[in-house]
Structure formats: C-alpha cells, structure tokens
Image (cartoon, rainbow, N blue to C red):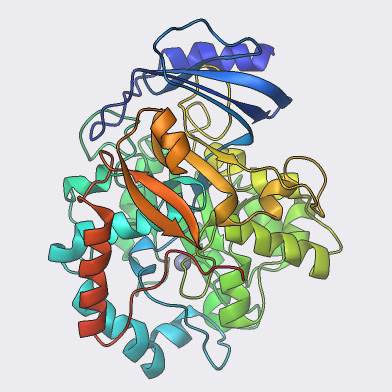
Length: 464
Ligand SMILES: [Zn+2]
C-alpha cells in the first residue's frame, strides 16, 4: 500500500493534463472487479476525476448527478503496445508461401512489394493520414490498447496533423503526457541499426539524447532474422558500437539473438519486445524467450503489425499463451503475459508513473472485460488469455469513455456512433473521433484500397 500511496503522491505532481483534443467528462464512477498489482478489488468503485483515478473504494461514493456505471466486469489497465506499424494495419492478412532468413528478404521481395509496399505508397499519403490514423486506432482500441507506438506518415514530419492526438495515445508522436503540443515526446521508434535503416549522424543524435536525459526509450528492430543469418547477427554489435545498447533501449524482435547475446542485453539493462505470431509467420521461429527469461531480460509483448501478426494486443496475448503452453512448457502464466502487455512496457517506456497499472493518482486508461466462466488459465488473467474482442465491454482513455457497448456508453453520458465488431453491438464515442464519423472514414478507405488493387483489412478477424 505504501507503494500505491507513493505513486499517487508522485503522480499528483506530474503535469499530465487531459488530452488536448478531447474534453474529458469531469467525473465518472465505474464499478467492477479491479485488477491491480496487489490483487483484485472485487466490486469496487473507480472514482475518476479530470482524467485520473482519484480513489478506488468499496462503498459507492455519494456523488449525486455524477454518471455511474455498475458492472460485474473485470477492469484491467489498458494495453501498451511497444511494437507496431499501425499505418500498415489497413492491409489484409498476408500469409507468405515461404519463410525468410530476415526482414530484408521479404521487404525486397517482388511478391511483398506488389501485395503491400506498392499499394501502401499509393494510400499512405498526407491526404489519407487522418483516415488511416482513425481506422487503425479503432482497430487497436477494440482489443484494449490505450497506448501504441509507430504511427507516422511516409513523411515523418513534426508536427503531424492534429488527428494524431486522437483516440489512443501515440507514444512517439503525441501522448498528452507533456502538454497540449506535439514535439515533447520522449520515445523514439526506429526500423533498424544497419546503415540502410539509420545513418551514423542519426544514431549519434539519439545516443546524445539518451545520455542527456531527453530520450527515455529507443525502441529499435534488432536481429529480426534467424540466428544463422549473417545480417541479423551483426546488428547487436552495431547497436553497441553506436552507443545505443543502453538501459533506455528496447530491442524489437531479437529473433536471432543467442543466449550469450541475450545475457549482454541484460547486462546493459536493455529489454526486448516479443512478437511471436509475426515471427513464426515470417521466419518460422521466434526469439529465444526461454533464454531471455533465464538471463533476466525484461520482455514486453506486442503484435508487430496485423498483416503477419495479431490484429490487436488481446489476440497477441492469446497467441503467446498458446506458444507458452505448446512450445515452452508453460513458461509464462496468463498473468505474466498480461503484464508483459501493460505494466512491463510502461516501466520500459518510463511511463509507469502515469499508465500501465490501476491505482489512485494514475491516469484513467483501462478497459472492462466480461469474465470468462470456463477458462483454461487460472484467475482473472484467464479472461484475457481466453477472451476475444467481443468480451471487451468498455475502453476508457484519460477518463474518456472511448469505445464500448452502447448501453455502457449511454450510461456514462456519451454521444455514440454504432459499430459492429464480430457480430456484437458496440459503439464509439462520437465526440472523441479525431477524423469525423467512423463509418465515413471506413467507406473512404475501402474505396481507396480498392482503387489501389487491394482491400481494407477487417477491424478484427473474428473467431467463428
Ligand atoms: Zn516491426
């Protein structure tokens, strides 16, 4: 409890105003079974004011006129997605007919170019930036994501259009943590360390930024290829030579890293981001997370992108849960996997004083999920590992009810736009949409994807 009190104390002094783009309802009350690091507070009330959790209490606060939602759902902190390429999540699933030694092999392959890269160049224009942003943020949101990384246009100009302030926090573009303007984020996302991906000057600038305390995290693709692949093998050395293997570095993928290299990652205080589904689809292998775990390396979990990875964080947890049970002798519990998608990436990104757990003083970023009755995993975390998108009943970001069942959103006084998710009735907060009505965004993108010779990916691939 001391820890919770301390976090509340610290958080009260950190300037983290409500997201500039969206006025928050001043106060909300939500009852559920609240999942915290100290255990589940059953039947407790979250008292939310100005975008923050101010109290968690058993008795319903006596606040006449304040919207109050009484549920028997589980309440989890929103997922923090530390590895994605959201602008590509408009593309349908790509199941390549072969496996590759590394990412350069498929990025340079004609079949990939025709299927994704060429239409992407036609679609990912400045004109379509906000439509794509809204679509892929909704796609993450329905799976419980409240913070994500990697959304950008082809021209990575700063500032980006203001729609980037949209629904979900964009960790490397605009989170709302540091005031109403862009340009103050402390996280850098990078495609790789080899000269074709990052020049020496950029590497030096990032190293200086880390040393000077202006960059909290560099998330960078490293060793996205098989252990025997020569190109992947040199990336860790290159990262270290550039002064970028630090306690402020998260190595994305790390498929090719050996146990001794993972020990080096641990000694540097760096962490890895695991994306098992996309790794198995593209390379037929994934990071040696058993060795990473043994060496004490911190591991976050994230989907990579939806063409070869999961549609959202919930689905990636489910996939990782299967990998853990079927290939890793039950290495990770459902609880560990959920934490690898919430509190762990929050710590890695140095935002754990703001999001990633539920406690008084934290920002109100969370979701409600329907409890599973017959789950293979024990306890509340099994409802995530065995859940699907239609089990998510509400997502709140900065105290703003953003997505959920029409009933829940109406109870919380939200103006809604209806949405069907895998046959279930859901709705979006119509006032929170960064680029206008969702149905129009979807229709525009469908037409443009068709004109580019492809089709718009579904929001979710539904389990029959
Ligand atoms: Zn990636």
